[in-house]
Image (cartoon, rainbow, N blue to C red; front, side):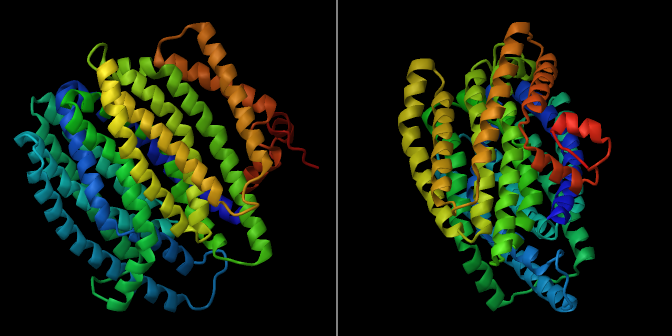
Length: 515
């Protein structure tokens, strides 16, 4: 297992390094877009992005997740065998067929998106934005397929390099155009150019790693479609419950309300880098471990999932609590005072979602790795019906009482994530998680509570001072109460090849005793 963890740590380091840059660029866009486009203009852009993401899931067909799992199994790096050429031939056929299928679906789905956009009574600018952003969404979905292959190969450099280039183009292009006085539609074209660059880099690098050609293999196509169906249900319905609130807000309120909601949602989405990064590097080894039925492997899988959950809880809880405390400071720093003030309470509701999403990502990855993707997809269907039904009630109610339907939409998202967590825990195989995970969660909450007291006592308002003080308070308390169990810390240090270095320091910080 340390070998798997070492690769996970290496890939996490790669992801983390690129995340610093892409995260910074994302924050630049978070500042620039709402400030220059205004609440209504940003609302139109956010609607176009959400609309395109909902429909572009039909390009997925669940193939992306299935592809990651199959590539990971065909690439057993922990137990190398002698059929190297056979496996790479199978990979070439799999990749060529998958990308050919996705290209065909992209054309069909784009025509569907365009047709539906003309049926909905949107204004001309909004409709044009949707048609342009839809091209970028189709390109991004093709990119996710290429990225899925690299993820299955546990090769993160190509993915991160392409994403960095996309972010640089999107941030630089949008900022340049907005400062020069251009509006919404030119910004939308920048998204298309950035998505095309990401896809081009991914295709070139993948072709160098595993040369492939586009072709139809009908038997393999059927295998991809049938294998992806359980994931398709999950992806489509999950995207519906994640994005349907924006479409409903656009029809039940106004562009400004969508803009307020979108501003809070983009901050929330940016802060979800932890589960996104961990899922990218952890799912492939989990998929291999979950496919092995030997009793020893099952125990190894159980220990690994418990460690991953402990790490996620230790990181997610302070991020969620800190976001709730600093919500006003964050919004005012990014967007100024006044125009986006209605985003504050929405962001505070989303801060609770951060913790739930982090846990749900781990639970979902475990279920899929153990072959329970069909049962997990049923929960996505339940959520997809629950979310819009709640929004039909919550959006008009919050619009009536507070003039901000986004509060109801955010509250519904929180309830939906709770529902997903309850369903995942109900489906979880026995022995996957331990009482130690509850202890870790309780300790992390205590430390986050202490962090809250410190921040309230200092009365800090500057978001950077709040973040620094909160981080110091939490980390110091977390080390004191051993939020991360010593065995987990020891495992991570061994994987990072740091175990035993400065033993007195490691004993003091993590409670690890080396002989």
